[in-house]
Amino acid sequence: MSDQIVRVLAKDAPIKASAISAKDLVERARQIHKTLPVATAALGRALLGCSMLGNQLKEDNGSVTLRVNGGGPLGSITAVSDSAGNVRGYVQNGDVELMEKHPGKLDVGRAVGTDGTLTVIKDIGLKEPYVGQVELLSGEIADDLASYLVESEQIPSACALGVLVDTDQSVMCAGGYLIQLLPGASEEVISKLEQRVVEMGAVTKALQEGLTALDLVKRVLCDFELEIVEESPVEYRCYCSKDRVTRALISMGKKDLGELIEDQGEAELTCQFCDKVYHYSKEELEDLLARM
Image (cartoon, helix red, strand yellow):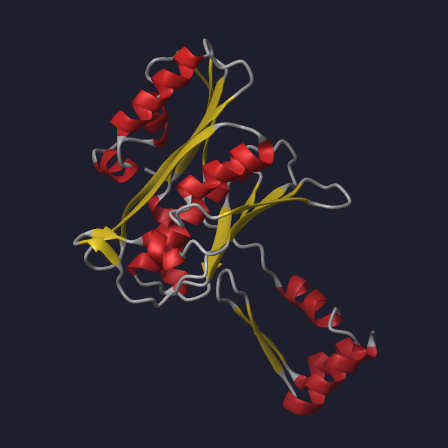
């Protein structure tokens, strides 16, 4: 089954929720960036969470950027989603050695660190993007994302994200859910939801059982009648192009571009999201400079 993202509303309670199952998406990121297991898990969680945030946007050309910098050995993690939930990202240090809480359980929180922030940037086509930031709670990313939604957007939320890495370092399963309480939620609704979240346990275990994204959200919201708002495929997608890279070169300015030509004669620029390399000959650079 292809990677899927789903959004639902509860008909009988003020709840909206998203869920995602995206093994191939996270595996694609692993292959591009050649990450070791703990980096695969951390980057994967960031991609999954960012995808669900992006998929909530109403603006067709909107985007959400998620940045996690906790001071741990992984360094900074960045994920960027479009409004369909297609996402791309990278981790600063993808070759961090295995870090485990106990055998078989990766210690993502320690690898990410907690001495730092989670930042969310929403670009919905206005003059300036919306930027929200919170101190990291656990470095596990799901808890931190829920904390951001409560503190910056005043939306009580429950979030679970999981990436299971196989012994050959490939991704076995990846997914998660994001449940948000809308104004007017009663204590009874909150209590039911909290109980089901605890009963649900690790999402990777549920995904191993063969649950889809829709199954995930149905299980955790089994006390409520659900309406499917949207169910759609999602993928790792980079938007880099020669034109975009060329604009980046032009933005250097005539002086810096001239010095680049004089010092190196040519240029190779690598996209940080997909590792595609763009080569510029001396003639191409001189032509760019002449047109500036």
